Length: 489
Image (cartoon, rainbow, N blue to C red; front, side):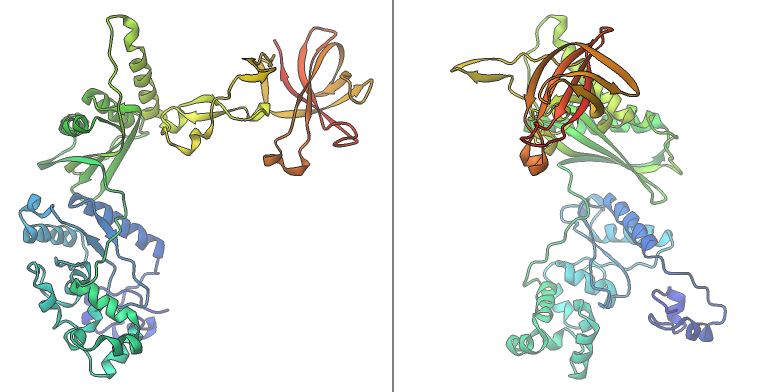
């Protein structure tokens, strides 16, 4: 049992990571210890990163090898263009640190021109805000560990008497690359700004966003709905300017205790109307199994447009029928907000001639360019003797999802059945029509696929069935099988 993380009191008492638990308890007999839970740590870091969205949408989790020293996990926040909203960089940084420390976290932070420089100052310096363009000079006095190097490489550099970044900043690069590899020079260039280092936000950046902060937190659902209406109205000019409508929106409610409530809705068609956007969130909140937990209240509310599409402006007329399409879209939106948009589906025909594959279900609000839209309406026309005409086929009222095997007897192997047993009942056939041959889809079923001969049959009591023989006798198989596939009215 070894220590993987130590709090501030443990550091002051002389504990260190990697130390055995027995040695640590020899130094501190009353030491409290807890089992390491990586999943819980990851969930906590994700929750903190979500909370950091209140400052900027560009929040990235730090990804470093386990053997790279740094003392603790961290985040990168790209605050370009955001600091003035909080009174400047110093005020913004002070607000972040005060809130996290009030929640019980031991935290350090720094603002610099490059991610590498900010990482180094946050861990190995008391300076918090580095003036623009001054990071290169300020980095020279920091230890080499600020370059995010592996421990083995740091030990080699220390043995050579190289302890600070300034010791290697101006040395010849070729010998260093030959002896220590390119990683050392890459980290140095990233920290000094000679090489760009992009951070990857954990969440996609919203297309449009609007937020409102409150001096006194709000709790009532009516206040949340009014705020959502205000934010939707603020977003509408941006949508109108681009001739866009929102397809997916997110309402983020930042609670004063750090918890973040995210409510997502999806519309059946591009929307920009404020009442309709508010209706989506009202129905979504009403569909919750429990009340919205406001805690001590929300001090920041943000409305994001996660996905948008070009909307088509249609000329309306004076007849009542002009609002039917809008009414249908509103109905789909209400059902989708309550039940989940994926549960509001419609049937579409598929590009296949196998009956049980000839249709599928798609969400009513599916994207136009979604992969699910590969289901296409099948053309009902064919070329026959140079003339195009519709194909008129008789199909059963009830079509089984999967054909059910039956025991059938036919007078000749390729003929229709004269009687069959299905679901423990015997049926004698009085009339039959067919066959209608449907070939297999070899590109899906492979070489083992067999053709089907469908028959429309009627028994001596007037019940009508749709059955087929799978496999052509002696050409595909010597033992064809019979299946029941549907029922006629």
